[in-house]
Image (tube, rainbow, N blue to C red):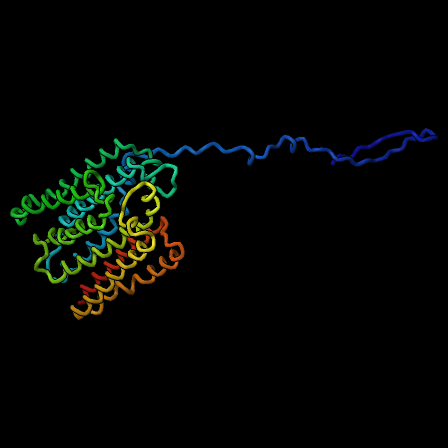
Length: 347
């Protein structure tokens, strides 16, 4: 606002002053440009180091399950009075986790090659699109994981108590796990893409608790009261986690022509099977409570049912799982296995 004074002469020659108020446009405001009208330049993604790419590519969240296996077997070892060899247990655990991560690498690579994961699809695995990871680098990571899985079992070769089982049993078992991890996704077998992924998970998890037990005892647990009975419950929990992820990807797998078990069953039956795996594990826990006369085996039900119920409430309308299922279901399974280990200790 600017006040303008006007001076003029009246009839007698005297000066009179009048004041008019005029509105002027602020020059600074007229030059002000709305910053929202100019699009901000695209953000350049931060360049990741080799180690960061390796961690992301291996999808290490899938190895949460090994924490549950280890806790169960450590409780069994303590309950049976065996000494726990921490260095050998860590070495065995590293070897097993690397075979699992190798499976993740091969799966990501072939999902990318076959068009299951697409850059324009937000729900696809973003490993090959957002982090500067190339197929050539993924292949190098695969070689590293396989070699490292054998490297971590070398301490067993030195120990005298394993000399009779290292070459005829341990090395073939690690080789079997690596081959299963590779052909889970890779042709010509491609277990996952033929609808048999659940059998692949079953075949791999079947030996994991026994190998962890073997690291401290030199035995695969056939004489143990708990190792193999608890292995069945561990397998049920793993299938619960695995099927949650395959059901989440049912639409993208169907569009890409991938015939997983979820695609074969259809959305409704696949959704029901997810919860069936959970209840099979819980029924078996109640069965163990009856057979072992130990009510604490039912802890697995009471510590996990609320989380499973929440998943059901969030997904029952559309019968679809979203990205969060890959974080929730492994935690539920790990919590269930920790509860089983507590039951072993309280037996």
